Length: 174
Ligand SMILES: CC(C)(COP(=O)(O)OP(=O)(O)OC[C@H]1O[C@@H](n2cnc3c(N)ncnc32)[C@H](O)[C@@H]1OP(=O)(O)O)[C@@H](O)C(=O)NCCC(=O)NCCS
Image 1 (cartoon, rainbow, N blue to C red):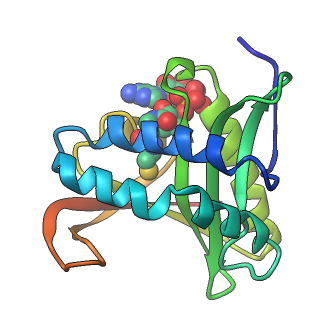
Image 2: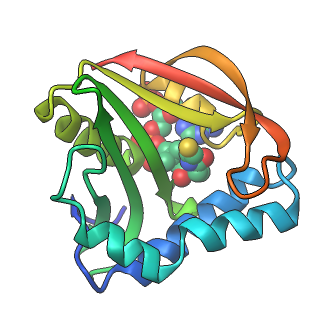
Image 3: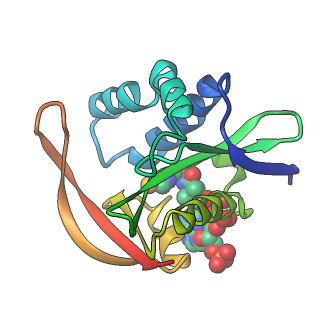
C-alpha cells in the first residue's frame, strides 16, 4: 500500500490526471458505451488543456471546487476527483477515478471525503453523483458510502443529443 496524500491538484499534474481519468472512464464504460463514444467523451473531458484550466479556475466559484488528487510520496497521481456545489446546498461529484490496480484500499474513500469536506464548507447538506447504469466498478462503491439510487435518466450526450445508455442519479445526506 503506497503512502499518499490527498490535496488540491497543482498545475503540471494535468497529464497525469488525464491518464488516470481516461483509464478509469474507459474501464468502467466498457460494454456500456460504444468504443467511439468512450474515446470522444475522454477526449472532451480528460485532455490536458481542459484539465489545466480546471485546475487553475478551482478557486473562482463553489460550482467547481477543483481537481483533487491522491499523490504518492514519489509524486505519482494515484487517483483524481472533483466536484462543486450548486444552489448553495447541493453538492455534486463530477469526477472520481483511481488507478485500477489500487482499488479497494480506501483511496477512493479518501478522495470522496476530501471533496465532501469541500462541499460541506460551501454549505452543502446533500451530495449527488451520476453513474452509468451497469457500472459495476462504481455503483457498489457509492452504495457502500451511503448513496441511494434516486432516479434513472437517459444518458444524453451534449455534443449530438444521442442516448446510448442510462444514468443512475444517486444521493446521500452529508
Ligand atoms: C469507484 C472508485 C473510485 C472507488 O475507489 P476505491 O479506492 O476502490 O474504494 P475504497 O477502497 O475507498 O472503498 C471501497 C468500498 O466500496 C465497497 N465495494 C463493494 N463493491 C465494490 C466494488 N465492486 N468496487 C469498489 N468498491 C466496492 C468496498 O467494500 C468498500 O466499502 P467498505 O470500506 O465499507 O468495505 C474506484 O473503484 C474506481 O476508480 N472505479 C472505476 C471508476 C469508476 O467507476 N468511477 C466512478 C465513476 S462516477
